[in-house]
Amino acid sequence: MQSLEQVKLIVKALEEKKAEDIRIIDIQGVSSIADYFVIANGSNENQLNAMKDSVDEEMYKKGIHARQIEGNVHSSWILMDYQDVVVHIFSEEDRHFYDIERIWKDGKEITPEELSC
Image 1 (tube, rainbow, N blue to C red):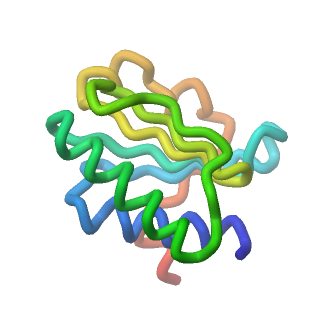
Image 2 (cartoon, rainbow, N blue to C red):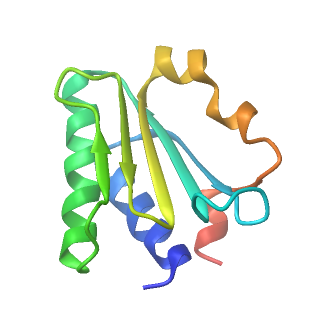
């Protein structure tokens, strides 16, 4: 499965759990660590964990397994590494604090709406 197809699957899984402010950053020309970052936030620990579980379940169904998942049921930042795609799930407060979008501003931002084109 191509990395952009993985991004679409991840975004759909996040949307199903009412993820807030989903952002996709294409970092292919900026870094070799991944092709895309998918960033989203939720309003509480239960939602963050539901988002993580939803993404992991959908990827697993396609035979894609996370290389690593950082964070636990009490974390306010969960990182899911699928090699070509890295998913960042934040609490709203931590998302503003770490400001991943600013750090990776040299990447190209893609909106979820653009994925369906």
